[in-house]
Each structure stands twice: as structure tokens, then as C-alpha cells.
Length: 448
Image (cartoon, rainbow, N blue to C red; front, side, top):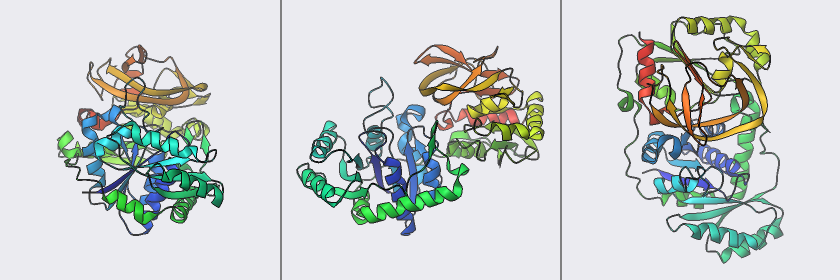
């Protein structure tokens, strides 16, 4: 039994990240062991959650992983903790386009049997806030909205008007936060700037969020609400049970990290380790060689477009990656990794593994995808079906090689990505917990 709260909002931009991260940090500083979670595919917010709690930020995505894995993944991450805080995605009832409640914060809350705290941007309303909260609380009778935190409140008088209105709704006010800038975090083309790029400033932002929450929220009432959650009754997910391979000589799998490659799900290295790999992280911005004995390489998402000159300047590592690829070793590259393996990115030479050019674009590509593996690769056998996610403002030309990685079926039909020798490179982000055989297959290829 883990006390738990879901932090939701009527819409994006209401202040979920500030409140959720502030609560995580405030409860952690009070001596509680807090498990941080994020609904949806977001990679950036979990970095701030990890900074606030000292534990890995974990995603809960019913579209990528399936509804049946949400409670087990939650139980795995929250094992041994006093409290779990789940930050929602978009508006409370917003999910995958055309799929009803699938992947919505509301669905996650119901799967976790967790009370919801609604964060409301009250900057341009007074009595109308009661109608808004009443609508959200009554829309789905299976939802339990246990309280409201009012954000961007202008004054004491404004707060008084809001509280008076909400007395009629029957939903208690558990916090009032004023309009201030000290807890703000900078953003750019794909959202917040990741923690890895501004660690000292990010620590200051998290501290400010915690202080804001301590000053404006009833932490005792929020903890009481979290402790009112019923037993979940789910067995924790286990990476070892999902994989099951043991090797006498663990192959070294190098995983790209550092400021340029910050997008990864916490379960991926756990699955690789459980499959028998020795997982070693390296930084392509600084390290001039791959880790000793590298048998396979994983390059996840991130912001290589921000660091293209620095990545290009590290010629020794680019040559090492190209050499590993030419040897036929398994390489799994997602999004940022795809760009890094191209000939160039915005004119700056990259690894040259793929016969493709990458560049920034004005167009944002964002959304869930249904995909099927077109070609046999180190990650998946041809015909493997899974759900994935795209999130980028770059373009790779051509979009696919002679042996494409994936065939997309929704929302449009197209082929995408590259499979050549041991390389699997694509824009598609995947969550390996939904397909644990991918990690197992990858490590098996590394042992050959």
C-alpha cells in the first residue's frame, strides 16, 4: 500500500509541473521517500521529478505500454516508498486522439485507484471557478477529485472570492499559489529545458517550487488525501521476469547520455541489465571513445540539434561510432540517435552511418503512432507490432532507407527509419516494457 496522488488540471499550462515537482520536493525534504511518476510519454518533466526526489522519474503511458501494465509499473517504481506523486498530462480527460479516455490522466488515476488534485489557473476568473471544478468533478462518476489547488492567484481578495465560490462545489481548496516568477523554468522548441543542461539552475528552480508549495498548500491535508487511496492489489513489474536471459560474460552495452541525449525511460537500462548486459553510460559531448569492450550501442532521444557543433567537433567519437556500425554490432537509435547517425545535422558532420541528411524544421511532429516492423533488426523481428510516439522539429531526408524500420498505420500510412547491418534507426520512441523481447533480442545480438 503506497499513499498516492495524481496532480491534474483542466488544460495544459495550468501549473501541473510546478505543483507536482514542488510537492515531491517538499515531502522529500520533510523526510518522506517519494516516488515520482509522469503520465504520458514526456521525457523532460521526469528529470525535474528525479531532482526533487532523488529517485528515477518514471512514466506511466497506457498507450505505449497497455492498460494492464500501468499498475504493475507503478508498483515497481513506488516499492518501499512512503508516497507517490503522479503528474498528469494535458487536461484531465485528454487522451490519445480518437481513442476516448485511452492514455488520459483520468484513465491513469482510475487504474491506480488514486485521488486527483486539480490544479486550476485562476488568473482570469472568480466565481466561474466553481462551475469549472463542478464540471470536472461530475463528468466521470468513477473519478475522485479530492481537492483543488488554485494557481496564479492575484491577491488575498482574489483568493477569498475563489474560496467562497468553491464552497458551493463541495471540493475542498488544498492550496492557493500566487503569481510569481522565481519557480519558472525556461522552455524552447520541445518544452522545458532538460535538467542535464542546467543542473545548478534546475536545482534552484526545484527549491523554489518546493518553497512555493510549502507556503501555499496544506501539506498535511494533501498527505491525508494520498493516504486515503485504497489498496492497489497489483504485483510489481519485474525487469528480470520480463527478460530472463543470463550470460556468463555480460556484453557491454553503451548508452548515450549527457546534455545532448536526455530522453530515456527508466525501465530500458533495467531491461538491458536483466537481459544480461553490462550497461555503461557515456557522454558524446565529452567522451572521445566508446566504453571499453562495447558490444552494442543505444542512442535515445534528446537535443542534438542544440549541440550539433560540439557533437561534430568530437570527431574521434564519431569515427568510433561509425566503426562500431561497420562491424555489424547492434545499434538502436531513436530520434536524436537517428540524427546523430546521419551524414550531417544542419550542415555539421555527424557519424555518417546513414546515407541521410538531417535538419531543423518549422513543423512540429507530435503524436502517438501504431507501427509494425518492416525489416528484421537487432530490436524486432519483421511483423512485430507496437505503439510508439513521435516528438521532433527536425526532418531526415530521405525519411526511410532501402530497408525501413517501421511501417506506420495511424494516423497515416508511411514507412520510416533505417535498418542496415546491426543498425536500427528511427524517429519512433518506444517503451520496451511493452515489448521486453526487444531488450532480450538486442542483448542476444550483442553476445554474438
